[in-house]
Length: 315
Image (cartoon, rainbow, N blue to C red; front, side):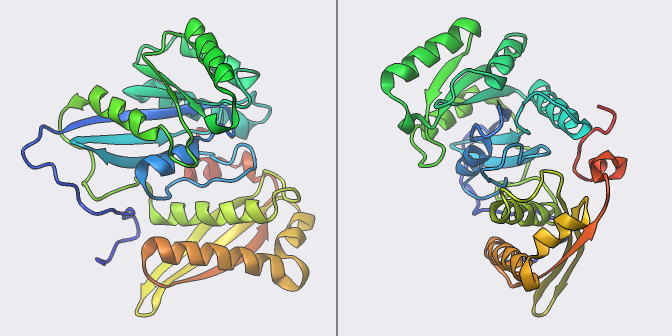
C-alpha cells in the first residue's frame, strides 16, 4: 500500500470508466438525529467515513464520503442531525446542517420510519419545502415498519413537499440503497470528477482518527459520559514500525475524567484498544495509539474548538 501524508484520505480500488462520459453531484444527507444518515453514508461509500453510535447528535460536523456508481462520482455530505438547539454548540451544528443542504446539488431527506414525521422531522419537512434543489425522501429502517404504515408515511411527506423520488430502504442491511444510487447517478450532471477515483473521504486522517476514538468513547460510556466530551489528535508520526498517534480526550470536570479513565485505567484501555484495532484495519498498517484525558472547562464555548471541527462559533 502506498504511503500517505498526514492529510491524505482513505482510498478504494480504482474504477473503470473508459469511454464513458463522467458525471458528478454533491448530495447532502439531511435528517433528524439518529435517522441513520451516517450508517447510510458508510453504506453508499463502502467504507467507514462517519462514526455511528446510539447517542443522539453524534455527528458534529459535515463529513464527506465519495462514491462511484457507473460513470458518476457522488460526493455525499453527512450533516449533523437537526434538532431544537439549546446551546451554542447545538446552534452551530444545526446551522452546519442547513448550510450543507443549501450548497448541495441534491438533497436526501432521511427519515427514521419507526419514528415517522414527528418532532424534529416535521420541522425539517416544513423547511424543506423552500429548497429548490432536486430532493428525495428516504424512509430508513423500513424492515421494522408495516407496509401500510410506510405508504401512509410516504403519502404524508409527499403531500407536504414535492419530492422528486421516494425510496424505502434499510441502511443497515443495504436493502433499497442500490435504487437510490441509480437515481443519483442519473441526476448527476455531466462534468469532471471532483476527487481521484480511488478516494472515499475528504477529511484529514487525524480528524477521522479522532472521530473513531470518539465513537468508541460514546459506545463504551453511552450512559455515563455527557455529550460535551471531545477528542483531538495531537501527534501523528509514521515510523518503521507503524504510525504513532497521540490523542487527548477533553472533558469538562474532574468527575468526568475519572469516568473515562475507569478503575485502574481499564476503561480508557478498552477504548484505546478498540480504536487502535479499527484504525489499523482502516489504514492497513500498525497503529500505536496513546490516549490522554484532560479537563478543559467549557470547551464548547472555545472558538478554537469550533474552528477545528469546522463549525461556526458565531451561531
